[in-house]
Image 1: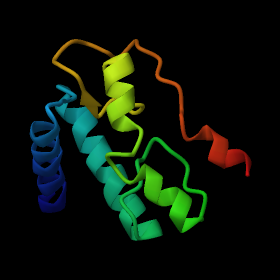
Image 2: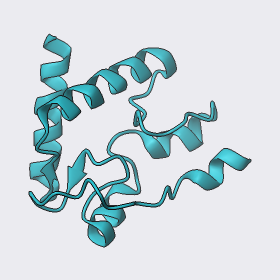
Image 3: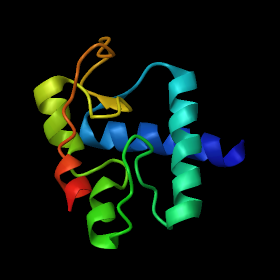
Image 4: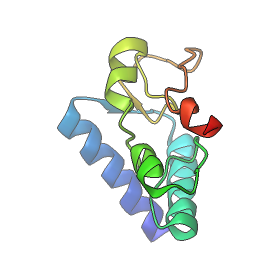
Length: 107
């Protein structure tokens, strides 16, 4: 649980630094932290648990949390693709964010 708590603190630190908010649902945050820990062990990178690793390190680096698409997604849709980070404290759970990384799954 200690590693999960460190991730929760990291989420807050990143959000504060970038002017974002974290998802207000603590259980969701815990699940994200677990997924990141699992991906870090499995792939050696903290790949977003909502994305698929391709096995191509240069491509997979794009989806290290927060992914390179997060800022643009938050500006346009109010939240990042997975919903970990958001613009403010509104409920964005019903907002559909397109997967800007999907093009790499077809290569």
